[in-house]
Image (tube, rainbow, N blue to C red; front, top):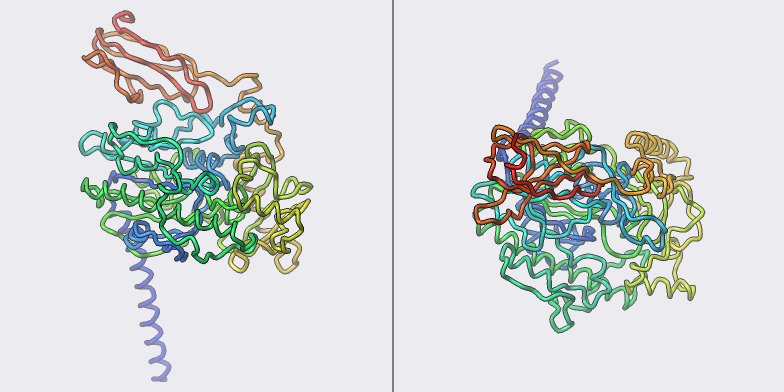
Length: 582
């Protein structure tokens, strides 16, 4: 009896300790949200075409001291996925918090290749209440800058940014104003594999950011000017779907060398932040705009095209050196930014906050992705993934995965793949991408088969998982109103409400009485911007966001403009208020 009692006491103590550990962990998670500043600065360091090729995520090919320091002082997120394997649709999701396929942003690009497609140039048209996340933060008092790439599948309204240019910088804000600053690094873009050495002189702007006097050269660097960060004979781990030869190894060297140069540029921006005394009240995000640049990666919705590493450094190194394995989608970024800055995510947002005051109570179970037109070639593919399995539905199984996309065929590795294909020298794995047709459904165990080469869709052992993910895809498609087989011409007609031309935002109306200015716009959901002429006769560079009536004297002169996302902007009206006085 005493022995049983002893066992019960030991078990009770063990369970008590376990409960205490769970509570401690919960308290620790709460403390992160509680210890963050009410309006923290937000710095986004965004690179292009970026798989998990860096030491914090297990790839030791090239050293990235600045990103490694960021990871050591922050949290790494290995399960972050873009909504598309290419930049513009993914950036649309980041900017709005909505899936590209729900707003007409899914075709890459909406405003180009019109001669090939026969389609008019157009823009994605979100619902009328949708605003860019930067505009929402500006409304909340933030100074918002973008340096310098946009590419959202729609023209950013004039009210979206305080600055969006190669000179944009937090240093141009008012004293003590919180900021949201985005720096885009293009060295790692796929073009860095086929342009002469792929390094652009313009990238050096990050060493001089905020200096509007500094000038840089245009174009690419010569071989003599190219920084070399690792030996050209470095041994690389080649994915099995690519041949292991000199051509591919040369591209792998370029890929990693570009990453090392990007890390140097990241370090320059971080040093500016530290020199300004802002490091410990700024939340720093580093991530890529989708997966890697290599053939059978970019544009596809295998993990090689969707998965990108993310690092977040919190003030005072909170949770430093840890890993967060939750699934995160790009549609979660906008609601998370609002949550971190103390604002509740908006009802139209299709993602969920993974940090901040309004962090979702439940972690995400699935991520979703789509692939449609890329430049001059069109496919229709949808995907859903949980932490282990990915389900892919091919709406055009009659055509192969590989499509002859001219931009991609400038990559030496792509040319080499096509040469070896034509000579019959690819092995069975390398041939897969070049099959004449593809299965209607695919299922991959992404843990056991990270390159997604072994389709399990017809294996009865996995029938329940296939059904689960297929059902989840159907739910998602219905929830976001995605009609995968809708021809792009019909999509444009829907976006334009059956009209032949892109809708135009109506010109704002002015009411002025008793020194009070009221501005309205008949276009539902339009953002209204204004500029008040300075005493020296000039107008400010930045458009202010009209939120409420303005108190102005009748001698004031103003510029007024309105813009709804996806519409053309209104005309800019220059107004002398005394002419409107009544």
